[in-house]
Length: 358
Image 1 (cartoon, rainbow, N blue to C red):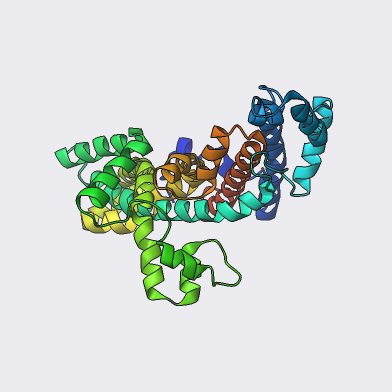
Image 2 (cartoon, rainbow, N blue to C red; image 1 turned 135 degrees about the horizontal axis):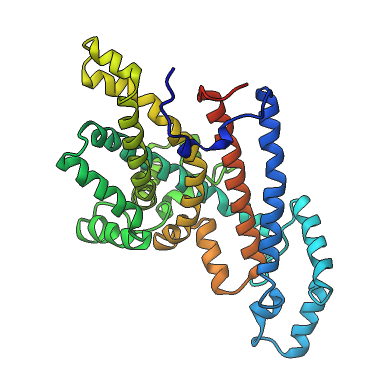
């Protein structure tokens, strides 16, 4: 089998340790998670302390000095920074990310309540990215250096470069304000949200809960509200997928085994869809982990633009109120999700990529 994937795209992480088997590779990748998460927790903790203690940052100027000092003492923020750090690390290991300052809620509760909404939005965005990026990438590769190919490449760059909030405004103006086809904001209508509260136990993923209810109207309402946020966030990644598929399909079509098949009279359409399509998907799998990070960062602006109350929406609210306890908890959880996603993607890539040596 001829290698059809650009090594720079796939990365060295796909190659298992020399002489190791699949399980050794999995363990190797898993243990890399530990220092990664530790470094992220450490960096986030100390960065949020550069402006002082979280109590002063959130409530300074709104409480009398004596009450402010009392709150600082009760929270333990007057102790040495290294002591606070060790205690915070211990709390994170127990699943305790502290308590928010502005609304006195456990950060873990915030993560569980709003994290599912963000994961649902990322799921919709990935569907859009795959549905748009992969087919258009195939079209661009099949029409290489033609006007349609140039137009698609320019479009891919624009999709990636255009700010999400600007795309969100255009989508809302076009489909919600001018045409009136789609809802302007929210995850579901008020009626559907009240209906979903009857699900026991709720998953927090509206589509799953609506399916569990077996209510077709609720399912349709949830999906209808997801169209614009999913498009705004998904088109960002679709441009990347388009360029990846185009580049790798062109490389595959020039491979020796494809040339041999072409000499035997195999049609160009069949070469594209049967011989070049699947190898071109391998780099897509390898970069999904990186794209999850991009989607989660983009979710902040998307959720704020569409009043989609997930982690990104709450992160922006807590940043405005300077509640750094909540901010550091949300940022750390997002980093953990990204690290775990990259771990899973590496394992999947190791299974499907023939270059991996077990």
